[in-house]
Length: 286
Image 1: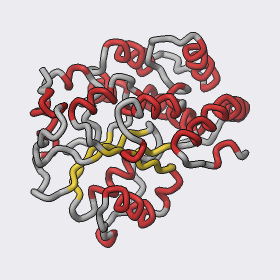
Image 2: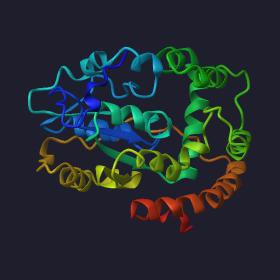
Image 3: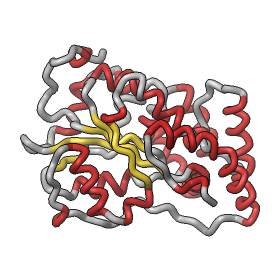
Image 4: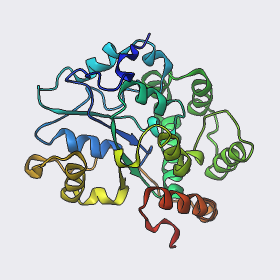
């Protein structure tokens, strides 16, 4: 079982323990940021970008030694980190991280939620069409039971649901306060509720919030991260390549109306988020 020794204030963490986590959101550019930081001198990302340690019961139960093995390649003074988008959405994660390290810092990438919803649907549509077994074996088979079955059904569906259908079904799960966590096309964009769960355990000062479009200016992003971590980051060796870009055939005409309705739905949730984090994004302005 997990060693809870690090829940005691002042108890030293192993030198290679992650100094911060990139929480998500899904389809918000976490892979780009992970690769960007991994290319900067003095930073060392985990051996796999998404460890799922705090979100998947199977991995969490194996204890922190297996988790820390993802950072064993780091040099002595490296800033270690990982990026698992599921951490932002999964409700059991904040407490687990708190028990591991009460002083953890977080970088949170956020994307306009209606666009994020479409991007997520499109990603799963391509998984379903091209490589469902590979995705299942790599990401789903070790998921918690409540998620594993639902995502498996989506991956192997003979007829993948249209965007409108996927949105309507997840909207109903939200309205019915369903405990079924997946599929979560709409609910993953409810950032206010997700951030609020973390603030039960961590101060707002422990978070740096970035918006996806900021990744188009890597030096500015690195400057913000350096200030957040109290580091002087030299971006000279940084890679600015966009990683894991989505592949689109364009937004289907019938999806335009769904996106418009989603923007209306998300608007009050966005306003609560902006007030909570003290930052505003132009998501409600169009």
